[in-house]
Length: 567
Image 1 (cartoon, helix red, strand yellow):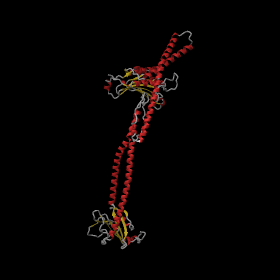
Image 2 (image 1 turned 60 degrees about the vertical axis):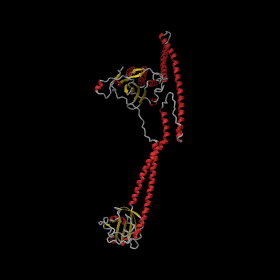
Image 3 (image 1 turned 180 degrees about the vertical axis):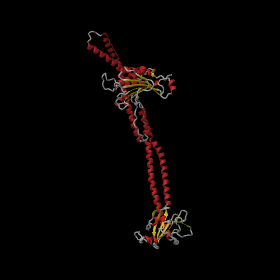
Image 4 (image 1 turned 30 degrees about the vertical axis):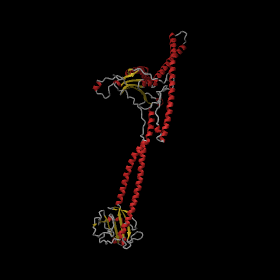
C-alpha cells in the first residue's frame, strides 16, 4: 500500500485543478426608457433640422428677391445721375496699377463712374462703367473687333461705397470677374476678391453704347442668414434638451407600472421554487392593471400565470409529500423483516447443519449479503426522510481536520491503486506571512457545529465517488482551507470528468452516472443526494464542477460549512 501523501504547508504536490464556472458573455442592452427618450429627441432634432432648412431657404430667397429689387432701383437711380465723366481711366490690361487704395471725398468726382453718387445709393453699392468700341458686342455676346484693338480702345471706371460711406475705387483684379459679365439685365451673384459676395446686374446703355454694371453687397444678407442658422441651432439644442427632460419624466411616469410588473416577476423568480412547499403571494396590483391597456394585458397574463404556477407547485408538493411519506413508511416497515432475514441467515450459518449442501450454503450467503445491502438502502431512505422532515441535527464541535485525515486514510485502504493526497492548508500560515509571523503562527482549530457521524458520511461518500468513477492511477486530492467565516473542503480528481447531462442532476435522488444496476458497477444513486441534504442541514453548501476535455480535465466537489467560533 503506498503511503498517504500529507502536506500541511499549503503547497500541493502538483498543479492544482483550476476548474471554475464559466460565465456566458452578456451584451449590454439599453433600457426601453432610454430608447424612447432617444427616439423622441431624435425626431425633435430631425424636425428642427427640416424646419430650420426650410426657414433658412425661405429667408435666403426673400432676401435675394429684396436685394434684386434694390438692385433694379439702384440701377434706375444711377441712370439719371448727371455726374461728370471721369478724367482718368485705367485699362484692364495693366495689372500693376491698383485702384483699391484711392479714395474720393464728397467734392471730388474724378475717377468715379457715373451714377454712383446718385441720391439714395446705400453703402456697399458698386458701379462699373465700361466704355469704348470694345464695349459694343453682337447678339451672341462676342466682341466684334480683334482682342488687340479691344484692349487699346477699352476703358472703364469702377468704384464702390464702403461701410463708412466713402467712395473707393476697385482694382483691376477685383474687376476681372465683373468685366466678363454679359449685358442681359439679369441679376447674378459673383464673388469679388477682397469684397466678398455681390449681387450684380450688367446693362447696355443704348445712348453711349457703354456697359454699365451695378452691384449690391450681400454681406448683410449673408450675416442675417448666418444669424438665423445660429439661432435655429441654439433653439434646436434647447428644444432637444427640454424635450429630453420632459420626455424622460413622461416616459418614466408611463413606464412606472410596467417596471412594477417587472419587479413583481423578479421577486417571484428570486423565490426558491425548486423544492419544498411554495406559496406565491406576489401579484400585480389592480392600480397597475388599470394604468393602461398594455400594462393591464401583461399584468393580467402574469397574474394568471402565477396562479397556474402556484397550483402546479402545490400539486407537486402534495405528490412529493405522499411519495416521501410512502418511502418512509415502507422503509420503516421493511426494517423488521430485513432484520429477521439477516438474523435467521446468521443463525443458520453459525450452526451450519450437516445436511446443508454446498449450493444451499452459497444461496444462504447470497441471501445474507443482499439483506445487508437492502438494509443499508432502507437506512439511507429513512435518513433522507428524516432530513426532509427538517429534523434538527445534533450540535457539537466537530474537528474537520480529524475527520478528513481518517476518511482519506480509509479511502486509501479501499483504493490502493489510486494516488491519494491530503492538503491541510487550514493549518498553514498565510502565504504573505514573514518569517517571524511563520515562527509565531498557531493554527486556528478547524471546528464546525454539527453531527460528526453525518459529516463523516459526507466525506466518505465524496471520496468513494472519486474512487469508483476514476480509473486506477488517478490522482485524488482532499484539501481543507478557510474562506472568510467558512471552512472549505475540496475533493478533486483528474479523472474523465462527469458528463454534462449527468452533472445537472447529480444531486437528484436515484441519479447515477452508470445506468447499470449490477453490484460491481451500479449504485443506488442516493449518495450525492444524502451528502447534499446533510450539508444543507448544517447550513452549508455542496457544489460540483467538472470538465471532460482539456489539460484541466477532472472533477471538483466543494463543501462549504460555517466555521464555529473557537471561543
